[in-house]
Image (cartoon, rainbow, N blue to C red; front, top):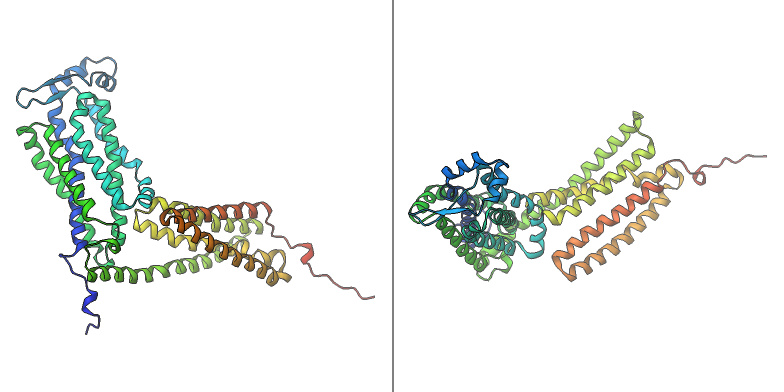
Length: 424
């Protein structure tokens, strides 16, 4: 029999989290239609007959010729829409420009989500993309350069919106419902591609190609209104969520957090054992000197977690990458167990316990200082405070690494050698 209380089970399709999935479905639908709209409209935008003759007559190269003559256009008598003399090479540049914009924001979007919030970043990206879609027909009249700029900025806006979704799902989706919620949201892209390919040509033929941008740009603005009024970054601050659904999401994520919290310790134990085995293997085969092994594992144990810590604020939009980095930080730091931590056994085995006690004392003092500093930084601003904590810890690690690599030794010290007493 199921001993769980009924109140722990949240509602399904009538819940707020599924409403969030539908709105995000609509957002993905809108963004993909805005992205593909130019591919449909370009057929009517370009006078292929005149363009072909122009490209054959060009002597300076097709791309340069098209850029110089991009403002040349004539009017179609039936739709009263401009027709542009863009060469295939120029069209290729226009099509690829939105991809350049998306690439530029893949990493910064996670950083921005940590500062401004995923809701604001995704909504702003969708709004900017929608406004630029409405502006595209006018930009085409001004010239191909402006179209390329508009498409690049539009790609940057959509890049922010795509990656910001996962930050929201990390706080809204219970572990056993993530597949359903994310697929409902993500299917908007496929549905949008289907719709734009079906109706884009009909809109262009009946109303003129500019209306492809006007209709789907306006649809995006409506979606932005729904997004900013209904969506919140987490269920704890949503004013309309039911108590039962809030408890269901929070308790589900708490259970998962317990499992995830144990993973860093598994990684730490594994790295400790593997690091020790590898260090002794390198020494037994005379592949590296003792001091080299100690400095190598110290470098790995200080450098790798520092890189992970610095990268954390920039990948906050990716739930999976964030979890992986949080597991790797304590895991890789335990490689130091085969480095400077046991270095006392190399330089002064007689006083190893005494020296280890002193080093542990400094470690405890560092723990006290770090806890106080962390509390101070977080109290100023929670999100930027944690970012500063990660950066500060990386800086401390780098200082310790440089100090040990510069002054570290592995030879038995004279003051630690056993002195033999001679009897007279």
